Image (tube, rainbow, N blue to C red; front, side, top):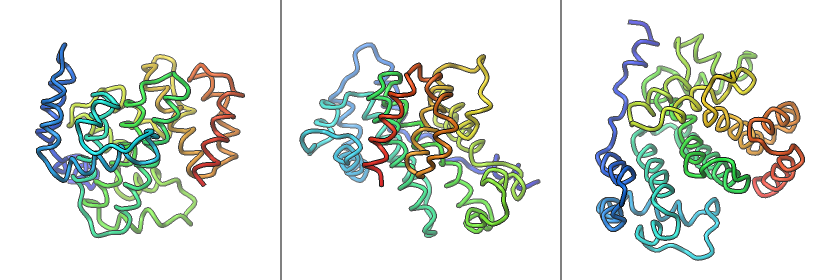
Length: 264
């Protein structure tokens, strides 16, 4: 069996039971918000992670949240579902390698920024943007646990290859493909899984692809340019991003500059 087959058949973390129960509430015509609070609060570690995330600068609440019930009240079920999903994702991959902490810190920053941009631009549901940002590099976490020498592969920047090319050369599969597989395993919306699969492929998007998926990839390109300080990449991509997000280039540039000023 090739390394690619081994990684694709690696035991993906099963969908957590609490996520299944929350999905049932999400799909209900009349969600029971008290039940949602009980489901999350029943796991002390999960509840603490949710409250910590809600109180982070990315969510910009005017007052501190002290309980899951308050989080649901202030943010709504969809937002809390995304936050719970992110907390469960981080919990699902354990490694003593410092790269794992970097992956999750970067994912939190990306998810938070994509949520903020989605809310400011009024083109996407913030909870969808947040979840997509969190999962973009989840395949890296999987590879760090299962792929031999993956940390070295990530740090080997002097070979002139982009990370996903390097992954395919060494392992026969890239982290975006694995991230998509994980999202499908967890029963998350297919448009989000497709956006994670193509998050490095802004220029290769096709009109027949789902609009939400293309808009999430565009928002990701903007957020990643902010976080990396890649001004040249942003100048190259901003007209395409503006077209996909149906927003004026000048408006996007204003938000880009605002986010850059607070991110660095």
